[in-house]
Amino acid sequence: MPTLHRLTATMGGFILVTATLFLAACSTPEQDHEMPPAPVRFVTVEPADVTIEQEYAGRVRGSREVEIRSRVSGILLERLYDEGQMVAEGDDLFLIDPDSYEIAVSQAEAELDNANARLSQAEREWRRVSGLYERGAVSERERDDAKSNLQLAEAGIALARAGLASAQLNLGWTRVKAPISGATGLETESEGSLVDTGALLTTVTQTDPAHVRFALPENDAATQRRARRAMVGSNSNFEQTAQLILPDDSEYRLEGSVDFTDATIDPRTGSVNARAIFPNPDNELIPGQFVRIRMQTQSLENVFSIPRQAISQDGDGEVVFVVDDSNRASARHVDAGPVKGDRQIVLSGLEAGDRVVVTGLNGLRDGATVDPHPQDGGDSNQSDGR
Image (cartoon, rainbow, N blue to C red; front, side, top):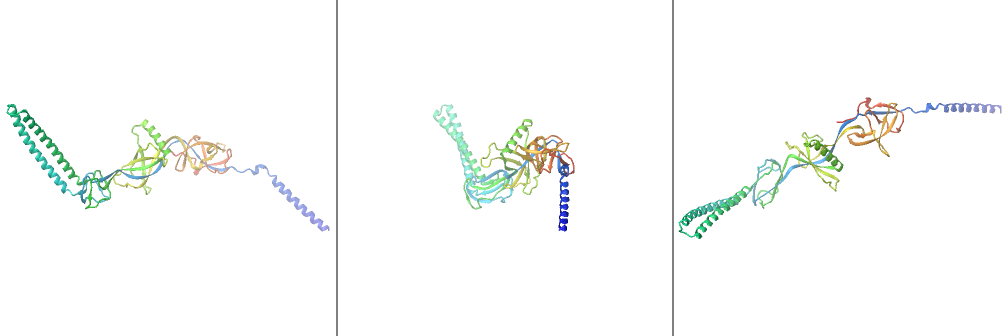
């Protein structure tokens, strides 16, 4: 029994010492539990002028697309071009059997000769009768008849000349010519076919310059119109320029211009139709090709550009955290503008020299002390106005 009492006393002493050490640990000063300042990275912002560009999907079209139709009927004797080749204005494309039209020209020439002969006879008769009338040898009625015959002969000349011109015109139309320079399409009537007047034979598409049709979202179209009005007010020669991105993502070497923006919104798509013109001297742009149009939609002055991850949202709008000289982070509401690449444009709410937090935002509270470091190891101006 004495041994049991001694064991009990020893265990009680051990428990007491353990409890004492535990309480001592819990009594560590409160400052020992304070968390160190959260590390954050920031950029220092400065105002700059920024241009905003957007890209829109578009399709290449010829500046002129002309249907080639026969203007006379007959047998299509020959196609005089290779389908798909470039032709110049005035080049022969088709030959329609000219035989019947050559005969019509000969008939019209003969009719004109006949009319000339009648006119010569009427003129001789008029000179004879008018001389006799002056001497009182013929009546006034005979003189009037001679005058009428002369006038009819003169009218016959005009009619015969018109008939000859019509016959020659029809004969000329048997050679179907290109009305514009451009790329030819497939023939729609094969050689040997009997074609009627107005029959479609092929198409010619003028590819220089080339047109690109695209659609602007409603907001972008309104912005562009405001910019145009502002620029036209200061420069009557203002022209909206555009760049073209080809299907292989390369940039087309020649600059174009936007020459048309529709005044109405397409109710089916909520967009506004627009057109740009690009020089195409080497026929690099092919009608039907899908491309992208890059154009300037806004020009902003004295604004700030910050990385997109630096901005967040709360119930009152867009928020950024700014670090002051005492290394405290304060939340600040800003007026966010458009996005440019991976950067957010801020229209107001920032000042030159502000240090804007870009990393370490998780759990960051207004008024918290932070350990700030410049992003990328340097405290440089992050406003990109290019």
